[in-house]
Image (cartoon, rainbow over all chains, first blue to last red; front, side, top):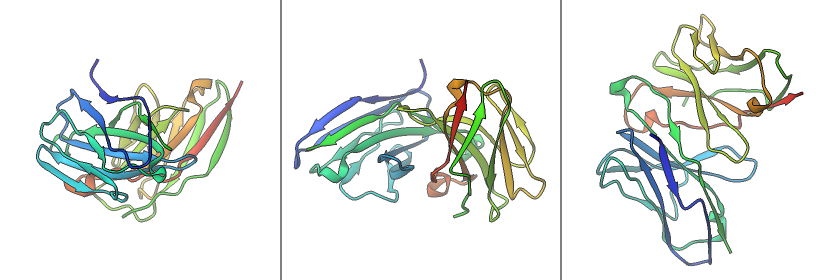
Length: 115
Length: 113
């Protein structure tokens, strides 16, 4: 089925460890983005990409890196995990404005706990 | 960035219509009005979007005021599965960072049997 696939669904890390959250979409969307959602809060934008080879920072980028080597994949790397990065992470994708103002498709999320 | 204002929470009875309001008094001509919802323990789900005219799809209807400073998401017959947080978001019809979705706190809709 077409959509946004996130792996893993759950992860526990120790402080200082690094890891990569995977995100893949098969809809040929130009836009991809990563959000985090803390308990009782709305989603906050971490990083986004408007196409392969192009990435930029959102409102909470510190402690995270991204790359976009293909249209399909947009991994999020935690360089040195901290307890403050305990959150649920969502990946999303969309067409760009050249194809009219379509809605975003979201993945089912990765629940990350840093101990 | 143009902001939206929504009530924190609303209640509805099952099988009754629900009207979820959103104010966006600083909306610009290039802002599309998007609605998403997030069911418990799930990712956000696209519901509907529009620019100037009212819009209908299989999930809901979107009524946009003539001056575009407010809109209303209409669920015609609420079901228990519609209990979720509903987000009203303005998305510019530009590329780059202006195409990003910026989430507020949304409206938590409860549906009573």
